[in-house]
Image (cartoon, rainbow, N blue to C red):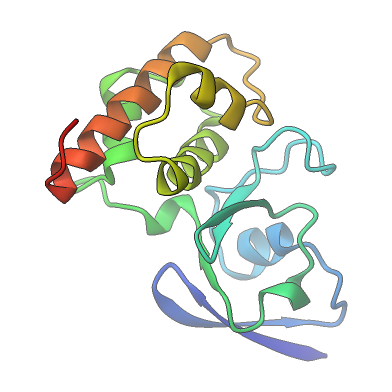
Length: 162
């Protein structure tokens, strides 16, 4: 058995695994008790399992546990709290950008990654940035509105409105 050390939601973590190729998703859900990342397709095509690794969105269903050694992993649980949600979470709540909620984890974390790269994306850039995340409930319009609101909220938190 090998141990992999990394930062998880701001705290030191260790993942023990017999299989270095074990998907990070299984470690997060089964060993760490986190349920933000969801199992969707298992093929990195739906985005339900999205997490941030060193600030970039990755599909945890195909990310081997051995690849996170020494890195920083952030899940939905590490963004904010019910009392103080992250600006992206607050925007999704304000725009009611969830129906069944299955895709929401991936949409929020993909949005965090997108806004870290481009603080003020155009609507076309948002569509392109979220193209790999599937929502079967049809809340796409609200999700797009939430991303645009999140950009404005993050800017106001950072003190740079546009």
